[in-house]
Image 1: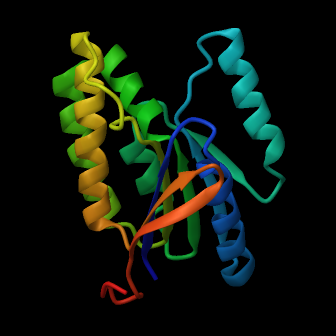
Image 2: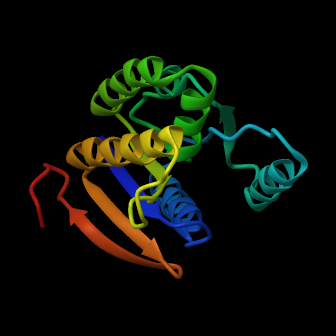
Length: 184
């Protein structure tokens, strides 16, 4: 049965840990494949350390897929009712697109991913940084990033069965729906 969750939060808020706990619980209860789709790219030593830390925290139950750009294709590959898929993180994926491919290419990819999420038949947990709580950035690229991440989050939240905001390791449920999609 399809189930989509969006988990938002700031840096080091506990959002990834929450997503991993939920994915593992679902997997323990239902079996099937357990997939971690990573969007990060190791562009420098500090990022390599972050990626390594995340990898060490996951055990052998996880299958790793890397999708720094073509998240639509990675999601399509694991679009199976018996799959639990965790994507971490959408804002890194957005950054990759804006910096490497540009705004128009990003918008096309965003629509492909939104369509893929809508058609997803397994359990999907999407992790993203909420960056819209601060001031409007001065630089054009930074403004595009904040705008596009906000619009992406809104579009996914409409599709999601559950949306949580995590702060200090504590989730605040913003949206919850039963398996038939009715708001609780």
